[in-house]
Image (cartoon, each protein chain N blue to C red):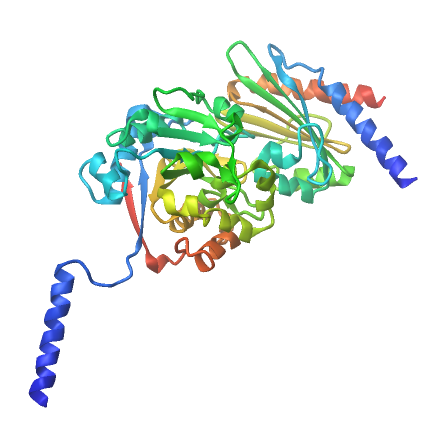
Length: 309
Length: 166
């Protein structure tokens, strides 16, 4: 009997060892978030350096995926040569400029082109005028990266009440938000808030004072199932509503809730330096975690990797 | 009776705001058309405040926002000046909005104008909030090297408002 127990124990240990060696240990993986900074990527007049911004993006992507080439990194994220990738940006044109820098969007698009053709990339926001004001040129032609607004006639999908760019045209989605402090009911306007711009216009105001609605947008099947990467651009961000600083970095991850949490952490670091009370975790982020299982806000379940170029 | 007084006040506010639309910053010309935004319940020609500034609008609504008159100007160097006149329900609410750091951040310093105001320089941005009666006026230029032009524009807008009042 004793020998049998010993044999079972030895077998169990051996089995565990084999599983570990194969990398199949059923342990819940942490959400990896990369916080990458490059002070040379932006100057104090909000002018981005294309080369340094590309270096920042490329390095963050490789660290994020633990790969050595951009092509392999994208393949790790599930990108295939026939995919059409929609990149949702947020052109913040009211008061101080917080739109993503074209240099960053260019770096992202160039990197994607290691796997897919340029015309398979669609950079979009809801408002074409805001895109233009943010130095993007509308391009709906059959060559080059496409830039468009959801107001350009692609239409909206009825069941999901989202732009057809997301539901019908794109096979993969990248969410590229800006590091923006709102200090209203939203606390911050980051990744989850960004897809409000993918909604049918009459639904957009519903995100205000309704955290469940806001959290639920990113849980809609097309967004939840197609999103392969989430990025918050903090080359220039705000840590208080309307008060900018040049953080000079980007925050990247697969888990949108973890990336939003990390972004709020970045704002709170700056707020601590400026002796301003920290921002709380927004209600919609808690709902996104608990109700919609979109990710985690739990620091113990987030692996943060910080890079300073 | 109350509705009549309210409508009269609203019309007076609109006429004052529209008077300001003719003001021009030095070296700048208007671009686009004058835009009007209302509350979610009472949308105006261009929609509600959420159509203009998205999420941030909620803070203005909390402070009694009724209407926004918006206009933009550009110069030959493609610099942009934004003029926004937020019309609040009462003068006290307009003042409270200026004190609300979610609207006018804490880092502002006042210009030598005869009305409550705060100015901010966050290169390359420069902007001013000022309050006159029920109006919270926001002026912004996307190149702080043109701060002097914006300061002068603020003074001109104020002068125009006072003349209208008289």
